[in-house]
Structure formats: C-alpha cells, structure tokens
Image (cartoon, rainbow, N blue to C red; front, top):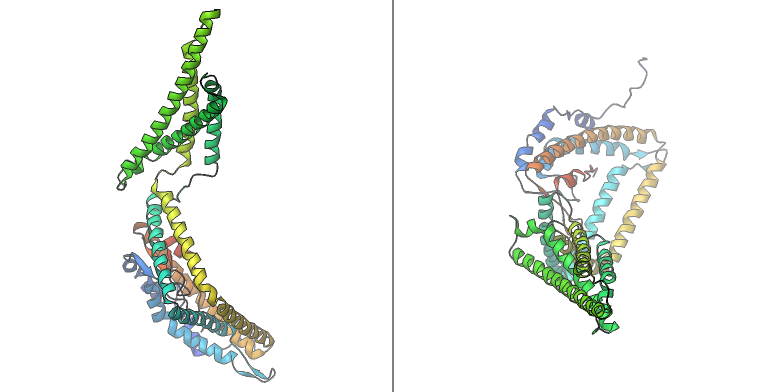
Length: 436
C-alpha cells in the first residue's frame, strides 16, 4: 500500500479513541462487573427503571445505570463532544456552521417531553381535585391489575371469558327443550294454548339455566373448594348448585306431570274404545330421558365455556373496567391541555425538520463527512454497549423465572399511569442511546 494512501478512518481524536477502545466483550472487565450485579439486583421484587428525560438511556435498572455511569457515560460524552466540535465547525463553502443532527434531535425530544411535563404541572396546580380523583382511579386500577397479575402468574395463562357462542348455544338448548315438551303441555286438557306455550318457555329457560349452573359448578369445583378458595366461595357454590337443582327439579316435575296426565287420558280413552295401552316407559320415561339428554348437552357446553377459576375472569373484568375508567378520566383531564401538547409537538417537529434539511445541505462537505465517520465509530461502540446491557437483561430474566420481578417503567407524563412489566415484557422494551 502506498505511503500516501489515506487510512481507512481519519485520525481519531483522543476522546473518540478512548471510548471505542473500551473492551466491551463478554469477558472484558466492564461486562464482568455488570454481570456480577445480577444476583443482588434479582433479589428485588420491584425494580424502578430510569426516566425518559435525562442523560441516561431510559429503561435502565439501577445496576445498569450505575454501570453505565461508571464505564460508559464519561468517555462517551467526551467522544460525542469531539464529534460535535468537528461537525459544528464553520463550513467556508456552505457559509454556515455545521450541525450534529443526532445530538440536536436528542435534545429536542427531551425538550418536547420536558415542556409537556411543565404544562401538566401547571394544569395540575389549577385542578388539584381532578388529579386527586385521577390518583384514586389509578390506585383502583393498580389494585385490579395486581389481583389479575397474581392469578395470571398462578395459572400461567390468560383468563378465559365465556366465548361468544355460549349464550346463543343456551338459546339453542332452550329451543330444543321447547320442541321436546310443547306437545306434552299442549295435551294437558286444563291448559289453554297460551298457558301451554308459556309453560313450555318457562320450562325451557329453567332447563337452560340449570345446565348452566351445573356445568359451571363442575368446572369450578377446585377453585371453590380447593387450597386457593376464598371466603364465601363454598357458600356461593352451594347457592349455584341449589339453584341448578331447583330448576332441574321444576323441569322434571312439570314434564312428569304433563306426560302422566297425557298417559292417564290415553288410558281412559282406550278403556272406552279399546285398543293396546301405551307403555309408561315410552310415554313418561322416554320424555324424561329426552329432557335429561338435552340437559346434559347444556351441562357439557357450560363446562367447557367457563374458566376453571371463577375468580379469574372476574379479575379480568375488574381490571378492564378500572382501566377504562382511568383512561376516560385521564382523557377528560388531558383534553384542555391537548392543544398545548399539539403546539409543543408542532414546534419540535418543525425544529427537527429544519435540522434535517440543514444536515442534508452539508452532506457534500469534507469536514462533515469526516465527522460522520467518527460518529459511525461511536455508534459501533454503542452497539457493543447495548449488547452488554441486553446480555445482562437476559441473565436478569433467567433469575426472574425463579423469583418473579416487577419492573416499573416511568410514565412519560405525570397524568399517565406508570407501566409495570414482567421480565419477558421488560426484555422486549427498547433501550435507546442518547446523544445530548
């Protein structure tokens, strides 16, 4: 290679060289010092993550934040300042100063969020009562969410609500019951057509409700009588079983009465005009068996349509209702300040657009190209930093399988609820390096 040939990269300023020289391999001292923190941090049941605004990347755990401040923040900040000095120099050809686009965008995004928080703070001082109600609604939502999350962790699955086809299926069961019994009730001589029809409908509803009660009871025996039962579960189960039994007894009693009345009338008629007497088993027993078959089909449908734990779908409904109420109150509070948010967003987007335009105009500048190459080296090292952090998150995630950990993500605005994440959800949260 010629001695006059340019090197693959420009001569690195000392700060950039210092940053990219940090050994961030898995076996390097910085990475090992972070990995050594995992056991201590995994003992925490709840971990607060770093804020969206500030010099640190958001969504870092305390151990990650300490490690970042000790091994990365200082050298990286100095390296970024060196790049900013190169990119920000006066460009004689363009007749303007250069710009470090990523740093300016990072600062603009922080200013956007800080401005919105200031708006919320001022609005809160004027509407304290509304924010107190919002805080109470958030507490109710958090309690409902915690109750659901506890059951979710116990069962290892989502709650099952009765599927959409369950209620229509009960109606089909009721219609089948009406078709089975209408002739029996219509044959009772003391019944008018209207009474026979009404009785048929009531019996059908009673049988569908009884099958629902029995199927639900059988499905949820363990949750109502097992180790995790709650106060009142046994009494509630007894009421469900009692109602189901009462309705089934009513149905079978009504059908027995109608069929025996029909059989008695038939026997009287045969005694007068002669002929073969019908069998009690075929007239009464057959009808009773047919009704029981319809009832068993309903019990099976109810059994498979319900969750094994009766409290699980209730907890899901409570969580969703609390969240809906919280969102509605939050939207009502945020509505008056939405215009200010839109103004802040518009100003920020306009500034970022101008920065991008300016950066594009400098693309042909040799000095700008040199600065961008230096910045590319920093981004390569940033990728290694994130690789170490992700490896640590993986180790923390493994420990969380033994002892669950809740990760508390900072809300962007004070009026918003903070998110709580499990280890899997936290592992999917992006961590973005800042350039401010």
